[in-house]
Image (cartoon, rainbow over all chains, first blue to last red; front, side):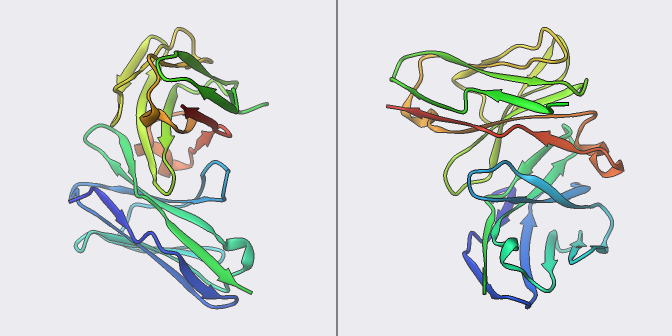
Length: 111
Length: 118
């Protein structure tokens, strides 16, 4: 089983709707989780981090973590065309303080 | 404050050639990283360093070498380039390791270096 899995997409969401991105991970002891946004041809930028079970909100973004089920998700409310990008899930493997990235999900917001 | 600077931005290499990707940061960060990203894939850690004089292998170190003689510079050396090394390479830096990223620290990425081996 791959360590961090994401649906590669593309995920198409109408403008103004909620986009839901999911990520599962294999290492039960992982404690820290990150969501990065990457526009085509650009470097990744951190948009959310979470380490406690439950929800963490920042503006239109909400990260959700469920350690028992080993998944982390990102919700984007009121989706905008500028949200069209690839979203990378990253998980901290605390055994060696490195992080493992998923392949990313391509999100396309339909105007 | 330039952040993380990578050079070159684009390069075409012939099979068997060698080259060095340069990375410099002016934020006095202890941690530096090299990642590669193949088309449609996530980032794979090649090498990282927790401080000057200290380097360690990541997930995909074969075919690469690094050095960290100073805090500012973390060059990545490709020896005997192969087509499988065609990728986008990202250098990054941070104050501390990933465990502390949650505490308000963040990781800064360079703009990437596009490498094609033919």
